[in-house]
Image: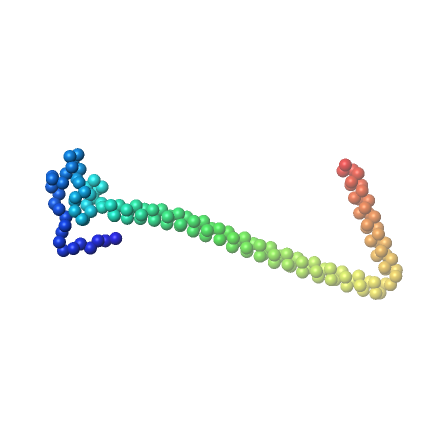
Length: 146
C-alpha cells in the first residue's frame, strides 16, 4: 500500500529534455510514480481507488441484501407466531370436541344400560329415518340440479 522511500532520491528533475514532441512527459519521471497526465495520481493509487469504489459498491449490495433478509426473517417470525396461535386455538377446539363426544358417549351408554330394548329400538329407528331422509334429499337434489 505505502512504499518506503530510501534516503537517496532517484527522481530526476523534470526538464524540457524529458518531454516528447507532442508536449507530454515521457515515462522517465522517476520512481515516485507522479504522472501529470493522470491528475497527479500514480497507477497504484488509481487501482486502489478503483478497487475501493468496487468494494463500496459490493458493500452497498450486501447491505441491501442483509436488509431484505432481515425483513424476510421478521415476516417469517410473524407468520410463525400467527400459525402457533392458530394451532393453539385448534387444539382447544379439538379438546372441547373430544369432551363433548365423551359426554355424549357416556349418556348413550347410561341410556342403553337403563332403558334396555325399548331405547335401543328408538335409536335404531331414528338412525334409519335419518339415513332415508338423507337419501331422499340427495336424490331430490340430484334430479332438480341436472
